[in-house]
Structure formats: C-alpha cells, structure tokens
Image 1 (cartoon, helix red, strand yellow):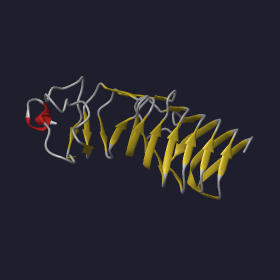
Image 2 (cartoon, rainbow, N blue to C red; image 1 turned 30 degrees about the vertical axis):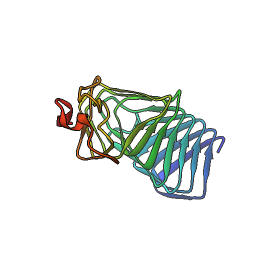
Image 3 (cartoon, rainbow, N blue to C red; image 1 turned 90 degrees about the horizontal axis):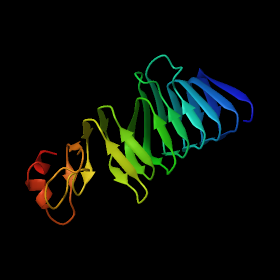
Image 4 (cartoon, one colour; image 1 turned 120 degrees about the vertical axis):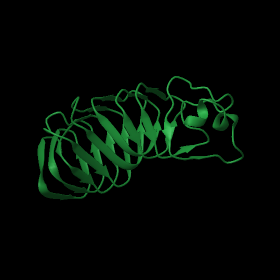
Length: 193
C-alpha cells in the first residue's frame, strides 16, 4: 500500500500488508503480517494474525476512546507510537520489542513479554502482564506504580544483593529464581516487591 487504505470494522484483509502510505484501521482483522513504514491510524480495536513491525507512526489519538491492537505473534516498534493522554491504547502480543530510537507518547499499555532496547518511560500507573527485560541498549524509567504478574530472578528495580530500591521497583505477583533466594528477596524494602 503506497496510497490510502481504510480497514472497516467488518473488514478482513487476507495476507500480508506492507504500508508505505496511510492505513486507517476502523476495526477489522489483518490475517497476516503488517509492516508499517508510514502512517497507521488506529481508530478502533484491530487484530493482526501475524507479526507487526512499526517503522513509521501508529496514532490512536483520533479513536475517541480506548482502543486495542492485538497481534498474535511479535510486535516490534522501531518508530513512533502516539496515543491520547487519557484514552488508553493497549497493545497485546506474545513478545513486544521496543528498539533503540523508538518513541512512545501518551497512555499506552503493553500486554505480553517486553524486550526493551530503547527508552521506555512509565509515567502512569500500569500493570505489566509479562516478563520485562531491559536489553543492553535499553533504558526504562518507572515514575509510577507498576504491578507485574511475573519476573525473573528479582523484580526490576530491586537490588538482588542488598534489597534496596534502585529508583522505582515493580511489585511482582511472583518471581522465579534459578539457583537460590537472593538477599534482596528477604531484606527490606526489597521483600515488599
């Protein structure tokens, strides 16, 4: 697509979509992979039956309410995601990859495992429902209450040796460790997370 394409709520696009123009998704389903190199306007809940690579802009500010983007496989963001300040954009995928240089603004929630190699700032209270991993180039700022359903080793933001909080720590429902409990699991204030 190098022009304009509108996907309606009852629409079902079979196959892959390579977007170099403007897609306006008013709902519907794309039964394949999506590669967005330009503008993807998300105005209603939309399902993608494959991978979604965003190298352009996803914009949900005109949706007029909360909107969901559900991806059955991997969602990769190397571009920009812009959501409304109060209406929620929820992106659900098995794996969510945020690349270096990616930009996310507005009220965005992720459901799925997150691999962050870019800059993520959580400035609104949110729940992470998958494991969060900060890659070698990743920078995550937690300036809000973060509730998490699962972590590996110790919750993000808790020093495993001392139990001290490094900035802001997530509150995990459970944590898996592979060898033995770390002091940070038992010492205050880390044991509260």
